[in-house]
Image: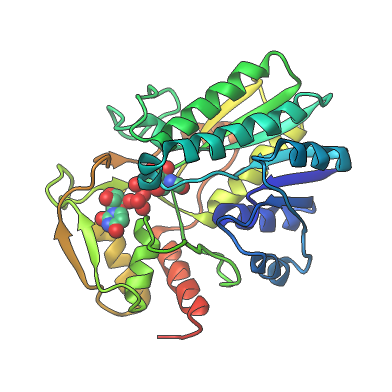
Length: 340
Ligand code: WQD
């Protein structure tokens, strides 16, 4: 039985492939290399001792997707990461996001719905909650009107999966990630943002490496403990393990609904300044930063209620914010081949 991981050379995808291989699954990676490098295959193999099968497939190409599914018929499950994920970019180029995040999902599902039984894990996001009314955020929190085309593609993606559930044999789990950060402790794989990092932690580590002059902290007048935004930063290793647990749940037939939803976070909120301090502890150096204006679209705080993931899914985060910053810094040094 093979497990297909779309976007498997990406940040979360590659860490999930490692965990799948560690659990004995045979993995086939689909990736179009638009936001990843084939070098990641070597990093995965360095950790697990086995290089996964890699297919350079662009899920936007309907015929190419059809060819893939004609060649691979013994698929036991699909974990779908392949998507664009930069909030700001999605505002500038909505159609790029609707095409890359939704057309690809539709082409994929058109093949999966033909199967007698299919297990499907979808990469969703806490962004669907917008600014939730209360913390911590449960899976029953209302879905708010999307604040970006990126967020909208996650909401619509979830709706598409729910709509086909009762007309197919696809059993799905939607994993709503909070903020994935960190890197594999071996530093063989990690986050490789294209260009100027949009997310906080890679910007911090690149600043620590001297690649960026200083970090702009977007807003310091929020109603939080120190005035900066609160997020639930989850180590990518914990997030990867959640995917394996979710897949195993479907394979074992333990799901109680055709579509199940889980918030995947640590259950703890951290401010931007707390993340900076964790970096300074990891690196032993002060981080140059300045307090600037708020960033449009930012929510004040978001952190997960992990009760359902802990009790129903049987998963919980084990790594701390400090662990994640230690590993993020180790990775940044590795890819710059220096130790500061
Ligand atoms: C975190 C905090 C910023 C950069 C988004 C998506 C989410 C997921 C993760 C894909 C915020 C502050 C950031 C900087 C800063 N997407 N910040 N200076 O916006 O919470 O979530 O990325 O996986 O779906 O919505 O993450 O890392 O951009 O920001 O002060 O240079 O850091 O204001 O408070 P975000 P982020």
